[in-house]
Image (cartoon, rainbow, N blue to C red; front, top):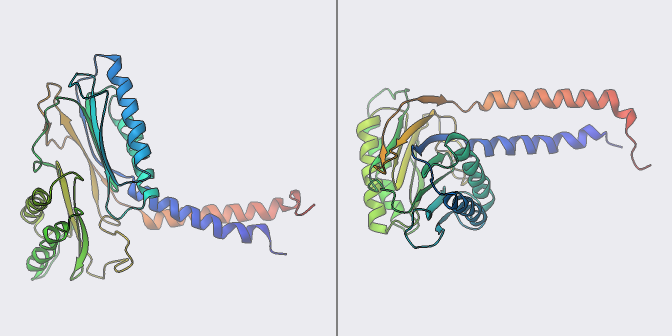
Length: 310
């Protein structure tokens, strides 16, 4: 009869590596919190109701926008939305949105009148009705890798790769991911942004990416209603052709705070603090292996205390 640890180890490996993949999707990239808080407890209750609705919807669709508290334009009505990356399953989207809720409540005051958080796999924003919004194509955050590509020809390669994004999002879905000569590109628009507006938004983002990141090995540009990213893999794009998004894994990202004016003045692109996050895949594997070895040892020492089949 096979020992219990032999049955358990493959299951634990699967669970651990699945959890590691989920953690990548829920890493925080940037956040913004208004300085002003709700003055009416009804608004706080409406926000709780909004959260409940958004989390519930995330198990069936990757974008949802709604209003909580009625459409009377009162200061207690809250408008909010979430969007998951276009390649996420409903299960992963739901996991990501649940993490968003917890993240916003952790990094912002629970009663702030407006907040936004962007994770690797999804983002959420909400604001009281009437809160002044920034234009759709205003840049909120950028991250250009400190690693630079040496040699000639990269500019042309990157330009050609980025040009695929506006063409790709014009398919009506507002999402595109693809590879061109070892450059992985991704772009997505907010779910209710029209086709022409979506194309213009990602075009603006790609232009910022080219001018700001130049020869960086990767770049991530987030505007108010769209974002784009690119990563150059000189040794080959991992997972290419298997439908797995690889645009962020293994590359530097950052966490940036975006101030939101309490007077409803919108967002200011202030990089008060940036924390580099490097996804430690090898470190994770090492910890998992160490954990499993300890667990296996424990089974060997204590398996006489377990009974099988009476």
